[in-house]
Image (cartoon, rainbow, N blue to C red; front, side, top):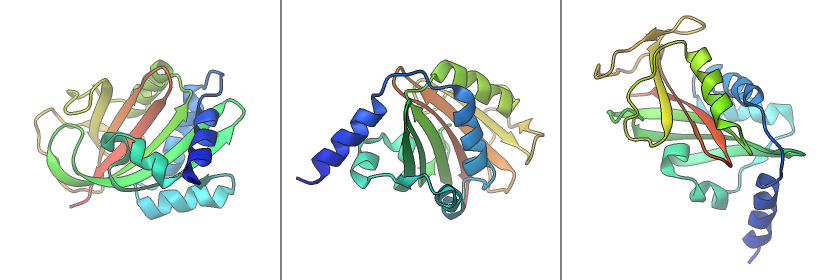
Length: 187
């Protein structure tokens, strides 16, 4: 089977020792996901324009939990000396808070990753209180309105509507991987 060597090579890259810093992951998240408001085509085009990202293998995408990849996922990755960095885009029909609404999602992660440092950096970026965890285990979720640097928290329980300034940030991780994602209502 031709996929097995590819999956093993990617797995070996992901398992490389070395501590990843949260700041580069958050920087890439802002560059690909925030700057393009989770727009699938624009986020992928931005990664492709750098020239160092390769398509994320579909078999690997299928192994990710749906909360990290959504439906109809696509992605890019790059393996570096200290591990791997990935960008995943997709769509879903439920917000991480549990509300049923169509959304676009854009996730950047690192393996290995420092999830505690990434959570702290993401909380500083969100600059609003965390929302209830909703349907995503072991994640910090932030919900706000506002584009740019000024974020205004949306109170828990308030129904989110499709708006160009509504954003949901979710950050999670474990000992192997740290991820931060932007979820934006689309319709």
